[in-house]
Image (tube, rainbow, N blue to C red):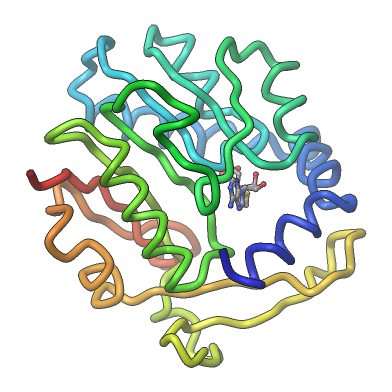
Length: 224
Ligand SMILES: C[S@@+](CC[C@H](N)C(=O)[O-])C[C@H]1O[C@@H](n2cnc3c(N)ncnc32)[C@H](O)[C@@H]1O
């Protein structure tokens, strides 16, 4: 787990999570959540027997939609305020889990069909590699990883860490929590490197922003 991820979690624990949760009232992003739900549902061919674990579920909107549609879903996070919010909105299965640190097999006694990691833009290349390794171990044969990454092509200003991560630290002026936040940006080639030998691409597209290219979105299928 990198110093960047530790700083991110500290930021959420010291006010950032409550602010993130409060933001839902101002902008519920209903359309975005419906689009993501439909994407997940399509990638699973609407097979409600599939087991789903969401990594870093935040406020839990996606997990709740999947649960309401009949999927067997577990929401997770490492920040208590987010876990409380997930319980509050009615998610039945909520588990405290740090996907970069905790041992998957000691916490979950089964392999899953789908892992979703949505808007986890604070992970550098080493953390992301770890996430891919964890997801590979956690998935059944032919299981899916649905994941998005901020697109490095729209961040030419990014700096580069010794491990190759394109990144910057930003203070978000519209947020009360004035700590610098770590953001990592990925190219399509970085993602090919991360998935090499483990996952094949089932679906890929870009979305977000005026030109619809702020994010890479992928459904990756585990290779046996
Ligand atoms: C930007 S938020 C996104 C939340 C949600 N997926 C969404 O799209 O709104 C990132 C989330 O990942 C969680 N997170 C970051 N690092 C984590 C880690 N190592 N283990 C578990 N959760 C983590 C944060 O607490 C936060 O809820």
